[in-house]
Amino acid sequence: MLLWGSAALAADAPRRVVSFNLCADQLVVALADPGQIAGLSPYAGDRALSVVADQARAFRRLDWQAETTIVLQPDLVLVGPNDRPVTRRMLAAQGMRVAEVGFVTDLENARRQIREVAEILGHRERGEKLVAELDAARARLAAVRRSHDETALVIERGGYTQGPNSLAAALLSEAGLRPPAGAPAGYGGFIPLEKLMMLKPDLVFLKDPPVAPSDQGALYLTHPAIRELYPENRRVALPTRYTMCGGPALVASFDYLADALRNLRRPR
Image (cartoon, rainbow, N blue to C red; front, side, top):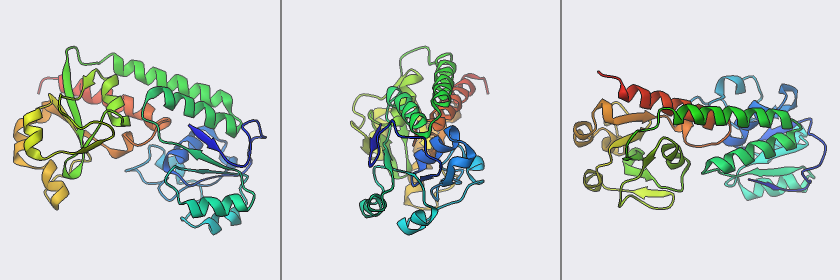
């Protein structure tokens, strides 16, 4: 959802757009004209975080200071829910049009967000095209949905587990997977390794799994108990860039998950 600052939705399409936010970066790259993009966040070109990193490298990268944005004289600045309030106030005080690009945790909000960002950028038709691509990717995932009632969890370093209110959980739900009884509620929480062994989900999706126990966070994901209980046909490596944002990231997420589930079915 977008929260509007100093201008209404019906205002003229912006000519110079700046994004302070990773998820907004990806929507802007997907929906705006290249000539509209005045600057993107420092994360835009990071392949670990952004599915449009290669395209984003063609554009100017910002730092986190409001002053560097003011110099660019944008007529639209996109920010995220957690961007610094002081920076946002400074931009608004300069008379700049500021809009917040919120987090999405479900498909309907993702579709709505695409359309809203496309509208403000002046490219409604590109928004409809991206929504159609999202629906097509969703259908491709549905074609490889698990055929029986299986459970799954998305687990990060140190044992943080994504809850049912997260985008990661929404992805698993689209694949026909559900969390096991007793899993963390809400956005998620940390679970000890012993509890994971008791919950015993059928599949685990490991966020950016390390290859060696180089620190405490990595130790959890590389523990011999996880390797024993979850061999290759019961675990999936899930890159962070597929669980953070809607828009083009969600399209890529559906296709990545479809490929991963298809590979689990293949005999080894």
